[in-house]
Amino acid sequence: EAKSAGRDTARFFSPETDQRVLARQSMETQLRQALANEEFSLHYQPRLNARTRKVQGAEALLRWKNPLLGQVPPGEFIHVAEESGLIKPIGAWVLREACRNWMAMEEQGICKGLELSVNLSVAQLADPELVDQLSAVLRDTRMPPAQLELELTESHLMDNPVAAQQQVAALKALGVKVAIDDFGTGYSSLAYLKRFDIDKLKVDQSFVLGMLEDSADAAIVHAVIALGHTLGLKVVAEGVENLPTAQTLTALGCDELQGYCFSRPIPLAEWVSYLRSHALREDRRRPPIAG
Ligand code: C2E
Ligand code: MG
Ligand code: MG
Ligand code: MG
Image (tube, helix red, strand yellow):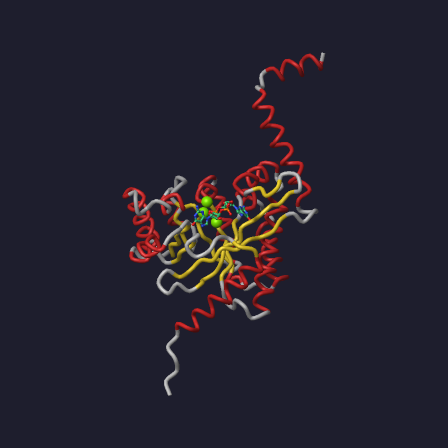
């Protein structure tokens, strides 16, 4: 009986659905072992001051290389990690690993005072243990809280704005900064936006990528910069792929720039050499000492 019921249910699924369910299950199975097998790594993408073009900090971006599935982009596995609850241990690893990398660089004197941005998922934001977890990471790694910025997406904050507001306040009490990621793609209530104790808006790359060709995109970017500044927030543009876009954003008063124009997300070792050569360029740019 159970068998025939199973067969009946199975009939509702097309072969393509079966394929997708299988792929999703296999990804979840692989993801379950990924931490223990050390398949994750972090890449870093610089964020520059728009006016001075000095490196201000970097965003840590998760990378997953699995022996069976190969290199899987975050756009494909983050939601699987969220739906399966695996994002909690994975997100905790990201936070600790990124802070550890940062302080190891500081000890070598490489990037004193640079800010580190880390993405948090909605499951992490909703986790009552997040604040304790973060304060333990800050203590253990000696990461200065003022140098750590947490990126929360607009839709995650607006999912449950009252709870999110409290969690943001508790995180801010530890001394870290909070940015709203992918701004403009969710449905922000301006009333809530005003109440959140945040530091920064990140204009979503979908508006930035084509802003030189599409006047509606340009208008949205302009409006987000104005809104951010009115609320006393810094505004960052992500997805800055070329210099004309960087120049336009700078002219519009955008505070920070991030995108392929300056660097793709790169592994830690490359990031260290990027910083070294960037510091060298800065030195050469300085006027020679008279005398
Ligand atoms: P995000 O936080 O908005 O990160 C920016 C994404 O834009 C990154 O994609 C980055 O590689 C890409 N990007 C940067 N500059 C450019 C550019 O000039 N042009 C274009 N076309 N793209 C650019 P990535 O690394 O594939 O990450 C995708 C998303 O996955 C992230 O979007 C974030 O939402 C999520 N994610 C990545 N790492 C983590 C993590 O550690 N934890 C969580 N919860 N989510 C993460
Ligand atoms: Mg981000
Ligand atoms: Mg974003
Ligand atoms: Mg995004």
